[in-house]
Image (cartoon, rainbow, N blue to C red):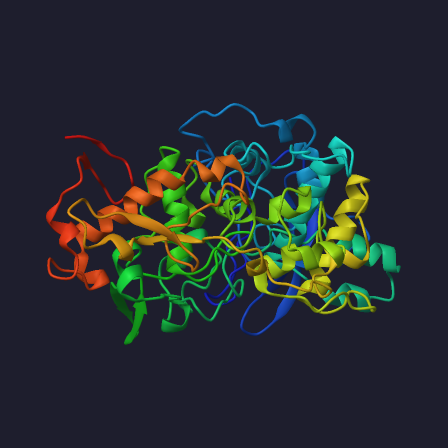
Length: 484
């Protein structure tokens, strides 16, 4: 089953239109090197409102009727989100997803992928830890916040609809805010990170990148935990890299250490996948669907000293006393923009305003209106009024070698430290139990690294006599251990 594939860099478009029912006709633009013209293609499911202008389509509906669809190898039960969020809602909200093709189960963004991903985060769209809002309001605000950030990160963001004199302001909003889940890769189709012959019109196009798209952070410790894939290949006398950790997915998972942390999360769920070796699996893997899962993982997971965006939206976080006095506490939206991209510029007065925090705020308002829930305090929709950063709440952030006890005639150990690192420590006074229960595993992973690679920490038998005393349990890099 297939439709017109709009491909500007490879000559004329190819048509292979199968029988799709029901038909919904939309207008797209065919782009070639010499011209830009309208073409009509059939599309399954919802389309943007009739008054919306044409949108650009760069991809295609998969030709194979048996194309891989999202599945869950763990067969997790349905999440509470599925009791109220429907396929009709998803397809109404995201008719331009997947670089214009629209929701499709064989492409990275679909209702099917979304609900499978949510089953790995059952608190998403389902938590109500306080009475600041009604339970159903908490649930919908949580989803609205996720969608708002996705719109800023990977939405179509076609501001030209606001210059269209045929549209009212409300109609322009309807067209603009239905542009979420559009891009798969950072910088979208024709990304400068990708090969010109593989410009990002297919999920597999992200397998290689230019030097600019590597996003590889390297030092002695990170090279032990999350060493970048350094393989290269040559195309047209130019070198391209396979270890490409540029942004992928709805919230743009970026940098090798975040790919590695997400990979470790998957392993704890019984999903074995090497994202450090093959980072483009974030977009192409459907069992389970990683494009959605990576984004929900980033939204739901604290990275000390930052709480998760989810914690803030539902009000399950610990602000500093100064921030509390300034009104930054409970279930609010503003600090989530600080978490995702250090943006605290506030909301623009004009429409649609610029990118950054302003767009996140306006999108959150629109999605809250769609779900018929309150946005909360206008002032705390932005983080610009925060008096402290998250680090003002003093606690430990990560596991590191216990330097003070290296001299003892006992096994080496690790201890929490007040600075960041690849192995998070979750203070029980700050973070939910689902994260604090990871502490023992991360501590043992830290101990493993000292014995496996003491040179990483500049340790030897002279300055660290504890290395002569082996642990009584078998340690591994992943923290999975067994008795000798």
